[in-house]
Image (cartoon, rainbow, N blue to C red; front, side):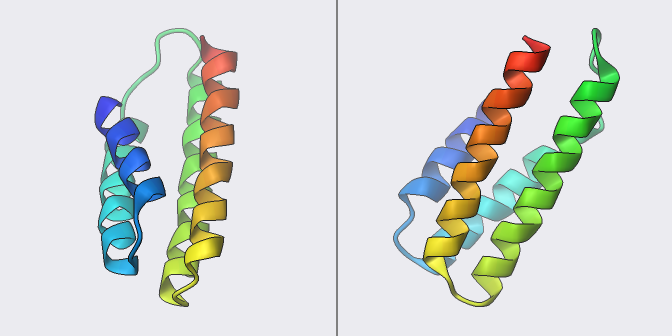
Length: 91
């Protein structure tokens, strides 16, 4: 999960699409790995959060495909909001 934070910070600081794309690919790999983990207290909420993350990453990918940096970063902000929401629910 620590790598996800670093990847998210890198993505948000990106100034070029190739740079952003690299960080997003890293986020997607980390999210895929995290989604296979079990959560000791509330697996359903954890799984819901991971599903939301995957859907939002798909939105970022779509923005990257059309070369829309603003939409990609907006979607990344939404991911951060979702992260905070689920961390609150699970924390």
